[in-house]
Image (cartoon, rainbow, N blue to C red; front, side, top):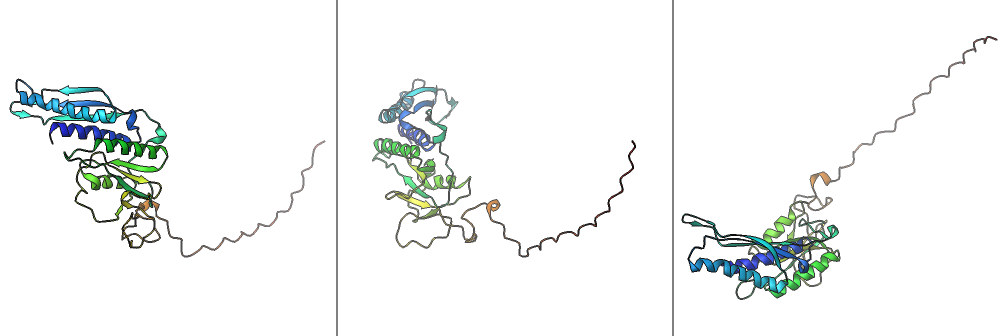
Amino acid sequence: MVPGHGAVCAVVESLARLTAAGGNPARARLTLQEYFEKLGQDSSRWGKPLVALLGALDAQLEFGTAAIGGKDSMSGSFKDLDVPPTLVSFAIVPGKASQVVSAEFKQAGSTVVVVDVPRTSALLPDLKIARERLAAIHALVVAGKVRAAAAVRQGGIGHALVRMSFGNRLGVTLSAAPTADFLIPAYGSVVLEVAWPPTSARSRTACSARPTPKPRSPGPARLSPSPSSSPRTKACSSPSSRPRPASRRARPPRSASPSAPASSPRPASPSRA
């Protein structure tokens, strides 16, 4: 990946991860860190940080997000070894703790959807569509419709689903066979666990607490229990949460203990006047 492409993807990914955590991308600010080889008098080396900064600037202008700080290292060389040209983007924003969203799946029976950001002919995220869809995701977070969210990174949608399945031991069932882009990076895309069934979205899978029949037509699936789980047990439940079977024999009630014979009252001792 050339420095310009890498810088664009870095800015988009940082804003997508901020949005997935519940932050407002429209209010975000960036800090950039650059790592490059020693520039010296080589004009081609000077062009690498220039192209990277122009790529980051292009993404910032589309999102309306400024970089308010950063750090650069232009001495990443030792003898004949050079660091790969790198621009790292960090996105920050103030927000409410009540709107913070974590990545792990929260509840069996939820619908899981992928909010895609298409790529342009230059294999870059479509910045305009990315800005609009990240804003729409934040609106859903504010409305309380998102239970979990994870930005798609280098491992693609498959990697994001695996990360979301950890934590609460909730798996995911795909509604269709994975396509060729299942493990391809999709910067700007976000996987959501939503609290309502969407009418139109590119859904991957969903969870369910009971076994579901095979779908007759393609559509969003439900999380189903693993083959080893019992129909009486909720899908993907941890061993500690399984109900304990009732005992087969009930203990008979204890009979009342026989009352002790009443003791005869002792005569009162004579009192002294």
